[in-house]
Image 1 (cartoon, helix red, strand yellow):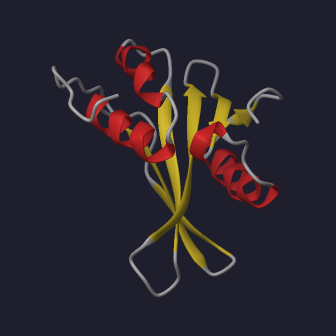
Image 2 (image 1 turned 30 degrees about the vertical axis):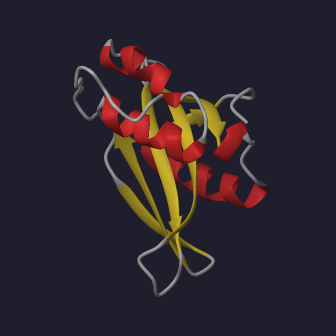
Length: 126
């Protein structure tokens, strides 16, 4: 992904934004609802989430970014990217930077968020 999107594409938001606290950090989750946001996420995380734009546009999946923030600062500490199969209300993929798996600590937050949203996590997601 070069950082430029030739044709801007967006789709309706289906998953409400969320905010919580974990070990003193503010954690925010929100759906990425356009190809530019997916491109930015892919560049930041160094993975291929941008290629999911057409799947999101067609309604097959949604992408959510969960981000942890440094206490007392408006600076992001880390993030994970989540693919949600909205039809089956399942999380089917969770990836950190460079496609790393989510840590146990990150999974605690993801499970809390997923439970509050009514999503299950497939055994292959992690």
